[in-house]
Length: 384
Figure (cartoon, rainbow, N blue to C red):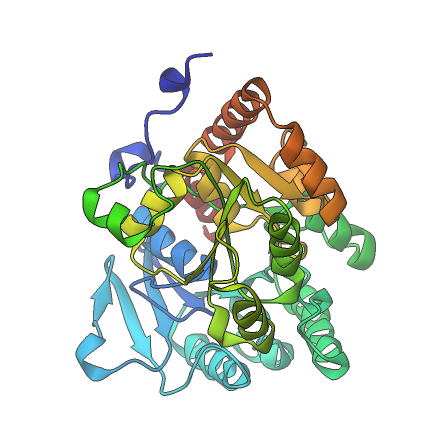
């Protein structure tokens, strides 16, 4: 198989790749709500907002709401989108107030609202007053995550129900979630996933090799947020008993007790385990990802995970936790596990033919489905 023919490298996209879906005499004002804002620094929704404003600013006038930001890091515009800052955080309990205030402001100044997430759902029943089109990407079955307590799960579930009932269009990012919403709410949602073609293959530099001793060797890699539904503990306990294989895990370990506990238990204790703090420098992260031998995607409660489709664009062989969403994303062409025993068997049975086939399939799927030009066009058709 000719990998070079299929995969020409994941470079930053340019306008010439986007096919204009319409011409407009007067641009609609589209408010993007529910992210930390632009420029994108972290998270799938921020990356989505970045590429929508990049590809579609010739069709729409965007207003992007941004969370609390130091004065010296604020921008008036980004990708020709107007940025509006609020003195609140877009995460945690403040996200509810943050999103509500953004929605209220957008009702006054925008023609349509694109809401990412469901934190501000409580105010949506008032939409009849303003009569503005509301498009919501709820972001998956967040209420099912183990990190939430009983009352938090109930609240998130209520927000989901309100979003489905009071939005004009619901977007789901995974076929399984689309089917679930149809079954649960009789909701005909629009399936739009994420792009991942912003990733790049980067050669190992001497500087980075001195910083990360595993570079240049054969290593498994997993990049996760430090939360229990990402099964980091399962990966560590598996590789703890496979000393002949290197495992590198990059995570925001210090952000949760789950992460801090694992870091205390494993960091520096096993020669084959590398516990790396979250990396926000894109080139550095891409260098580590693109030179890994096998990537392990262990998320169990995501939709179409941005981190997964990004690695698919790098042509890396991928092993996935056997969640229905992951199977849909990879079109059942990866290898799947649901326990440490299954993962161990998979690792010990890997061979070059299997890895080459998975690598090819992941690249083919990513190029066919998970490019920002494709994703942006689908959003444009909804926002018209």
